[in-house]
Image 1: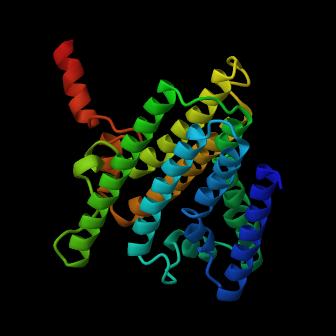
Image 2: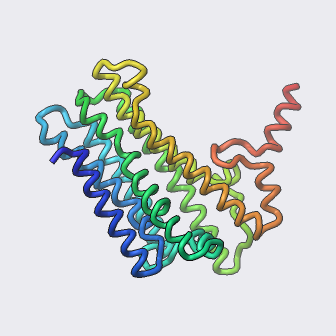
Image 3: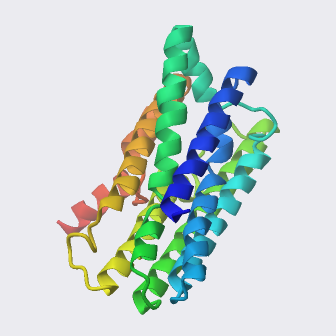
Length: 280
């Protein structure tokens, strides 16, 4: 079977399983449990096709290994939070309370299952582009791979800082919300690093197309850019919703919002203002 067709079939089966499980268990977090797993499967489908092609499969294998590392980190972090022990994302419970039962089920089918599972296919499709344009691994590929790992390390650090804070909070040794470490420079550094990794993954696929002789359109800019674009839109929307909940719980969150970048790590705004005044 063609690798793209096989990926779509696997995605359809995974989506159906998540939907049926959400109905039987009344738990809508099944996509969350699949989030770190199915992209790894999809990319390895394309890598396996490259390995069987007889051409140089290095780029696809590196892409698959990078996504495997991404999936392993995310699976570990999700598991230690209780994600595989029946803990539902608190945001779904809040949305369920704001909707009628039938409205939430439509939202579950179309967005939680349909949109997100489709997105998980779309973000992996730069591997499809790389398979279509099999070419030797380049220095550009290596640079992007190193950047991907650096971003993965940043996300790992942010997640660990958040885990340590919430552990202290559970023990009564902290309160409120985290504003130290990487969270001093971004309100959601882990979200930033997550999105950035998939933009780098897209760049590796684009590098394959450019190496094969395609120019700006169809090469550096190709149709699979829809994946990281939609992922970024999803994260921005999710972040705004998450922050509305935090703001309702903590009055001081407004000041944190005012002084700290939402996603891209930057010096706190008060520090930047002082630097500008000094330079002026």
